[in-house]
Length: 172
Image (cartoon, rainbow, N blue to C red; front, side, top):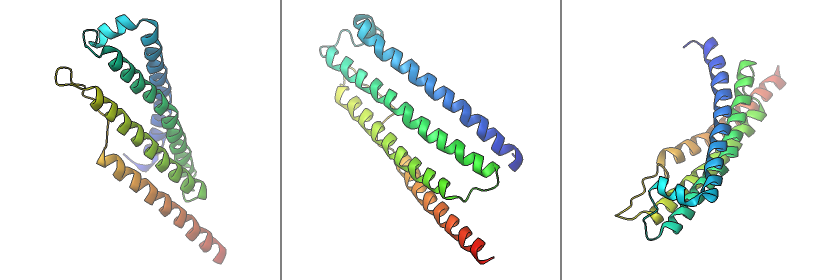
């Protein structure tokens, strides 16, 4: 993919992800609300109706859904910052202080997302039993923590690049 087509594709892809993120959040919020409206049906649909601790499992699943809803605005903030960065690259001026701040904020948002994932994984482990195992794609992820570290480093690289550029412009 050439440089000229990569940025427009990234821009469109990020815009699509923003819409999908909000749709996902609305769906999860709707499902969460439905668990309160029709709990017996929900318990049967999730296969927990016959469990001795079905009420506890139901509340744990609601907690997981609530954490999923909480992740939606965090994802939105990440996507909006990435979109703004793509705009600066398209304008030919990526090494600006705003991008360093954006990357730093993204790194902290990724930390929050990883903490949510660890919490969800912990809830899954608490309610999982040998008779009724819960397999969630959540919990500690070494790859996520490496991405967080990389994002913090890139934020610092952008900050240094901005300073170097300002120094260079000052000497010319």
